[in-house]
Length: 293
Image (cartoon, rainbow, N blue to C red; front, side):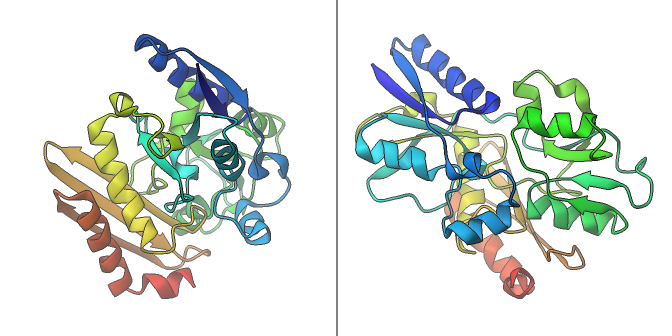
């Protein structure tokens, strides 16, 4: 019996149940253990500030990883975009299933239809910075909470629109609420957005049968690029890779927090690690480190 560790949100449990179903199809029995993370417990502080206060890059992963190392769970299911690029000693990513829609979505209104000064909610510096570059007039405010909580705040009128990942909306059956879907040329997705990650103790579980190879190649390129900037998942940086046969195209963006400086770089290659490093170098050559401060 495999014990699956998961956060307790509606979306996290959907993801854990999805992995459980994939394991069942392959004749493997499992149970789900809910574990609450730092990011779940503190919901009134913006993510970037919370990361600085807790001095951890794993706001939504650390407690799950502790449970893995302690032997309380056998595998942990994460949203890959929440995972730092450096894993604790003794742990490894053992599978990356096929990616869901990787893009960002606006709920409540399209960008064009928002009036001047409209209040828009989003939790990620990456989204805030790119949105400010597109509409500097907007009043962009931090919004925390699970997906259903954020939608409720929108419905209560606290915001005129909110930005969310398409993947979570689609997984929970709320795709009909998407007013606008942003291609990467407008708002570049977070590293690993839309993908799930299965983490386990090194050598314990060989679950590569659950891995979707094009997704693995794409997210490896994205995570390598992020790793070159320190590996945290809260900096205003996006990276998105597509795979066509043996060719990988990686696009990345780095933005100042106020959205006034946007640096983009893209390249193609066949080795995801080499490509990720090359795109990071291209960003740095244009001053990305200075923009990120």
